[in-house]
Length: 126
Image (cartoon, rainbow, N blue to C red):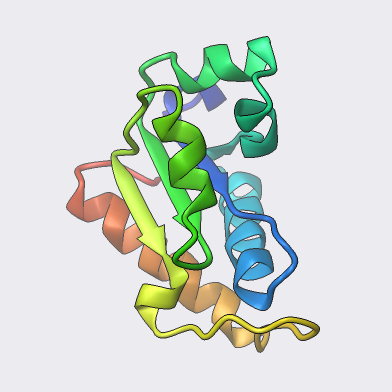
């Protein structure tokens, strides 16, 4: 894979809780490392045409939600788009809290968890 459009898309929660920000930070890290191309889930949820077009393009999608609300998954469901990989951080043992961040070491753990899920789904993250 040498072009960004060859990469899977990654969408993340970016709400106000610690797990939401951890999901967002992991997606940003994967984008910056060339493991996935991050796109904007709020634009998808808001019906912004160019962003909806990307989400509906048929590229494999990795969706990362922080908690059981599943906002990323629901935004995609509204377009009848199903992510190839879905990771919910509260199912990985993270507890949703407001007004605090997750420990720094959690970022690498989450990136590894997402990469493992991608590999299991047959998505090459390199």
